[in-house]
Image 1: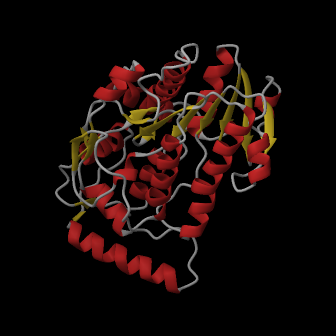
Image 2: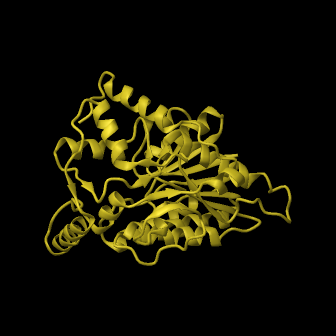
Amino acid sequence: MSILVTGGTGFLGRRIVERLLTQGRTVTVLGRTPAPDLTTRGVKFIRASLDDAPAVEAACTDITTVFHTAARVGVWGRYDDFFRTNVLGTRALLAGCRRHGVRNFVHTSTPSVIYNGHDLAGVDESLPLTTSCPSPYPLTKAIAEREVLAANSPELHTVALRPHLIWGVGDPHLVPRLLARAHAGQLRIVGSGRNRVDMVHIDNAVDAHLQAEQALAKCHVIHDALPAAAGKAFYITNGEPVVLWDWINGLLIALEKPPVTKSIPLGAATAIGAACEAAWRVLPLKGEPPMTRFIAAELAKDHWFDITAARRDLGYAPRVTMAAGTAELVAWYQGPGHTAP
């Protein structure tokens, strides 16, 4: 059983690859950045981007399961760039799966596909996908998820996972950015500071992906039935909502950094975000704006989710708690060579 992992050199993708290798699985990685350490361990590497449709489709040859973790991620950028990677790249993968007889497709989506500008407190998968969002990432990921689930069939079982804020040792994005902005004095509590969010430890996120594959694979021998997970989306979190700013400040204090005390009302942050977006749209400014309307909402509103469906249909049970994962992360940063910003 050969496995294809797109984005196999990223944080989530690499950890999936590592887990598959420990299971003795045959792994192919599709990505833009070569990983010699993986190829020396028997991983086949296909160097290609998701917008190279012929290469993407060909990568599905002799593959049983696809883990599609690659995506264009960010809160700012040209919609066409996000669409080309997140939608057209996914379409090419699905076409390759159909052409080459791939049996299982595990798609890494995001809870932001249901963005509606409101608090999301304990919501389940019944909320509709967004069609209006001030960021191209959720919009294009929503289109991709819809097409992945629509592609579900007795021949190709598909599932979409929505992990929220993946973090842990080795995270190159979420926690390092928080720490860097806090160190630079650029972090502000947005809104009341009491909003609750879900996060998911990297090991739990990997567990969910492999459990999703197992859930899809178990019914291929029953040709007139589909597994309960097929054609569905699932939230993947630690199941332990935290007060976002309490968690951030707890991490900073544990790392002997000053906590964030300055705050800004959500309305003001939203206005600043709109102004930044206008400036970045008109002027030749590089990188992402320091604030956008989407970031303001993410930092101020509730974002926690009901994972009952994942527990029931995937057998998902978070193994690493928020407390244990945070302690592990602090110890890692305090170790040699890993000084926090």
